[in-house]
Length: 144
Image (cartoon, rainbow, N blue to C red; front, side, top):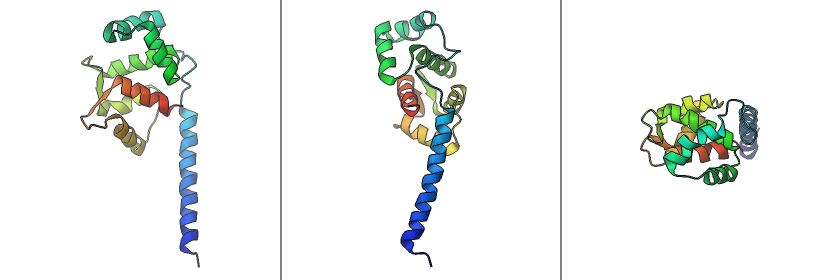
């Protein structure tokens, strides 16, 4: 007969194994953020319309943000460009329903339960919209 403690330990070990396998597969599919991606836009061409004019940030501010998040400046601009392709109203927000498509375009293939957790993190107020800077912080921290 298996004791209740042994059964719990066996389940926990199995759950841990599934969790670790999921983490390893996530790690394999994550793109490095400190190495410029080949499709990342030219910094000088993309920085002005995406950050300097729109958010009144200086180049140094954007570089500091990239450094703080552990992301290469060109990759930050690439993420912004992809985010903006879903931001049809140019509001700085995307709908929660656009998140899966955006993540796929950035090389992430989340399962439905992972997507639900991402939405919980990104749309804490439940309004159904996701701010670019919150997304960037979440995306960069999830990729490290």
